[in-house]
Image (cartoon, rainbow, N blue to C red):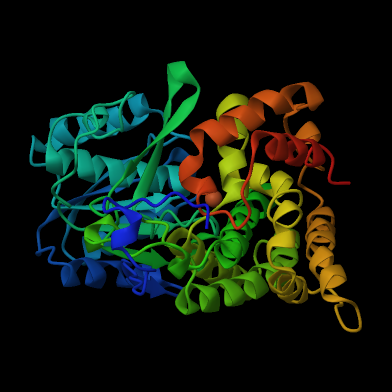
Amino acid sequence: MSYDRSVSASAHELGSETVWHIQMPEIRFGANAVEELGFQLGDLGAAEGAAGLVVTDQTLVDLGHADRVTDQLEAAGFGVDVWDGAEREPSIETVESCISFVRDERGEDGYDFYVGLGGGSCIDIAKTTRAVTANGGEILDYVAEPTGRGEDLTESGPPLVLMPTTAGTGAEISPVAILSVEDKDIKEAISSHHVRADAAVLDPTLTTTLPADVTAKTAMDALGHAIEGYTTHRYDDLLRPSDPAERPVYAGRTDFTEAFSERAIRLLSNNVRRVVNNGDDLEARSKMLKGALFGAIAGLTAGASLCHAMAYPVGNKYHTYHGETIAALTPASTLGYNAASDPERFARIAEMLGAETDGVSTREAADRAKEEYVRLQRDLNVLPSGLNELAGITEEDVGWLADQTVETQKRLLRCNPRPVTKEDAEEIFTDALYNW
Ligand SMILES: [Fe+2]
């Protein structure tokens, strides 16, 4: 295999990987699960009278979702403050203002617990705020060099419970927080098991107010996690590290992750049309939230790959929504370029997406995965037809984007089932300009 081996011992001392490992927050799922938030925090050790902070945004306050959460916390005997300054794609300055709020209200020790309520941005701000207040210093201490100082987090801090209000990012279970560096047009990640939440409470009644276009965009991100996780390299394509601590975060697909991918692809593709057309359909909303959770368990453990690698340079330069970018890139990358790596697997994806595959060759069935995915996007009627409609990207831009992908996204490309050169990336970006 041509993958980099992210282990310290030399290859001749090592054999193939034989072990996989899953690390997850506690998960509580279902309609009105918000009513069990107080119990969940008590179970994590928050004592009566403990003071917590809810990190959210103004929209969720206006919609009354923040009140539903604070009412539960007060009924359980906790004190609660709300910080509602979250913004889309939060900058380091925004997160610093949340950390300053904590230190002004509570001193260096911070709150006794934290709740992140909202989309990926609110959740990432909550994760970063708990991590930095528990470990001291400032955000840039823990951002990788050269942007930051690359210090390791050593403390997880007090309980953190995350409550997603979108069905998509998977941020509620991931060990990563993503922050924008404003003056550089780049995003940086703080990645550590100390960033991961103690519990995720997923309540579909918190998702029914999500507008149709955001519903569609976040769903395509979730579907991307499920499909990319299903088609990434196998865990035993890597070498077993001599120290288990060196096992990479994206460790490859296993029987465990594949089971979640398969269920996620069906749940998401069978229900996304329903929730985009009728946001109040609670049964379909519940299936989407479950599908997004399963997709994240699969994709964020096995590893996202080429499509996510290509999406980051696009998002950094053009400030597009992550899910919309994934939607524009998936046909050409995951379902186009990568289909040759394992046609039987892609034929199964086509069948899971709802394509007719009886009586056709394996290769033809594999190609139908891409066709069926594009049909799904067109049916939703709120997604761009490709990178050109998404952000005015043309053939003149693909050289720079391809260069950025192969130079800055090696961590994700390492997981891809086919090697990708700069020339390959240029072709895939060109293919993604117009999906229909
Ligand atoms: Fe994603």
